[in-house]
Length: 285
Image 1 (tube, rainbow, N blue to C red):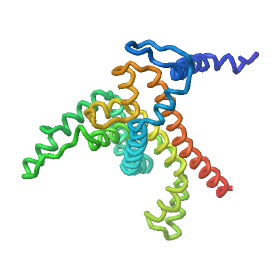
Image 2: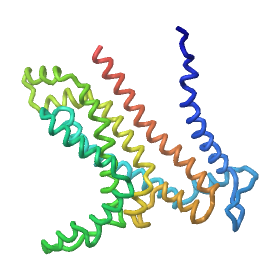
Image 3: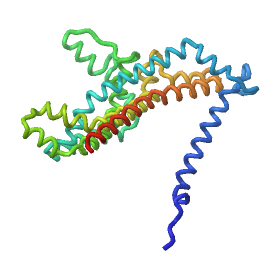
Image 4: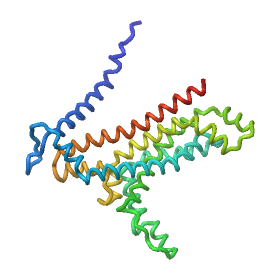
């Protein structure tokens, strides 16, 4: 029987990638042009002026920095909240408990981002249940929207399912026999976790961190709605450049630089993950 060439099987995937990268390269090409004053048109000649303007802009610099800090904060909180849930899904003796956690995560996926954003606006708002409860206890209301707090809370809620579902498989791949052997040798539950489960599942943990950081860095909707214009991430700044100033070349340059900025951050995490995987692989041999 004649086998189908691998290239033929890859054609659908290559076609999709070609469409994606063609749009990406067209967007990149626009970054070397300039806006025709008073219009939304672009014209040549090609130059690096837009990149120089972005790199010299204090607003762009602070937005890049704030985006990285906020994304790292969200990722750390997602890890703190998500690791116990992932461990519960992987090691819970009760199938009902595992299914309940999985059901909650799937329900979160099924609800759209806009639905969740508006739900958090109601919950965290001045007349929402949290502030009403605080007033009922004789405490003053706390501002939880139109600031970093609302954006962080909503983003953590959005990315935790990504983190948990990615990490659960890594924890499941840790042989239970190793944990039982460590306990038989006198290790406490926490010591077994710290010396066996956590190190072996750490590459999977870094994969979950990588995915969470990627999603958070590119977030647009939650900063827009929960930030109320006071919290601006790079995606929001690019949006403003495109739809407020109609400056497509400047927005394109900012997008290309941020892509490079994000790739460097993600590459650093990926290198750490690869190094740990090789180290653990060497120990196993």
